[in-house]
Amino acid sequence: MNIIVLTPDKEIFRGEVNSVKVPGALGEFQVLKNHAPIVSSLEEGKITIVTAGGEYRYYDEESGAIKDGSEAGRTVVFHISGGFVEVLKNEVSLLVTGVRNGNGNGG
Image (cartoon, rainbow, N blue to C red; front, side, top):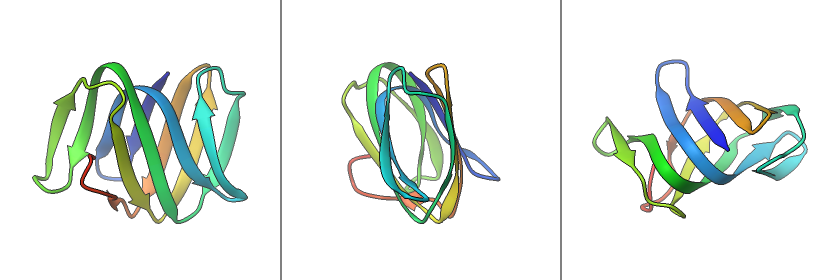
């Protein structure tokens, strides 16, 4: 499944993932391959992405640079202030605000 995570001023993540957990308006939920189509607002909270095999690009807050990776099973965590998610045909789009790196394991 492909995902793109965008803020108003930069791309935070793009690539193949196994799953993504998001803080939906009615509680946290997880998106896996072949998820039903959905559009939802997001609350303040944590986005957790688990990468699949293949190339991905992510914004590294420490260096302020876009980095490439290909490690399958890597967990990338971001904290957001809010936003929206759209899931359609194994394409996930996250439009978020107030992003900061969530842990030392990535992102």
